[in-house]
Amino acid sequence: MATKIRLQRGGRKSYAFYRIVIADARAPRDGKFTEKIGTYNPNTNPATVDLNFERALYWVEVGAQPTDTVRNILSREGVYMMKHLRGGVKKGAFDEATAQKKFDAWKADKQKGLEKVAAEEAKAKKDAAAKELAQEKKVNEEIAKKVADKKAAEAAAKAEEEAAKAAEAAPAETPAEEAPAEA
Image (cartoon, rainbow, N blue to C red; front, top):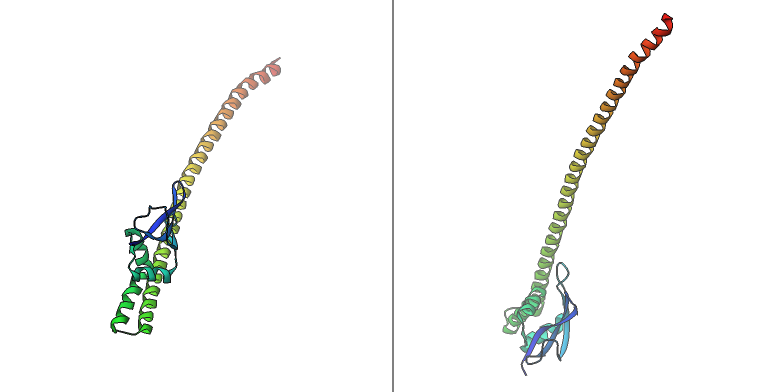
């Protein structure tokens, strides 16, 4: 029986969620499977993988053929690295402890790289938010300046209007005052 390591789709429409399964090569994508060895959620950033490492390594060593996507997932998780190191142990190039040290060093380096990428992404997001805030403040200042100018213009116009009314009222009142004085 030819076995494959493949993804089995789940989740709702437009929100795919996959199980990583061992299945007969002739079985349909969402059909019968031998064993579930993990899950893969591509909707998160970065994609979330929950994998039973030992079972995945066992199936790869036994000869199960992964699909392209699953091969990339297993490679990122270090299954192929461990298979490679175990091959070196079988050939006598180094012992099991050295292989485990090399794998741990590789995993730590990979984790450090992922943390660096996450930190850079967070910094870029923070910088973008700060830039957006600065632009918004600039726009708000311009709007406030226009409003202040408009209010000042309205106040000046109102003051001119009151001065004009006062000027018109003052000459009209002066003859009225003079008329009773003449009589």
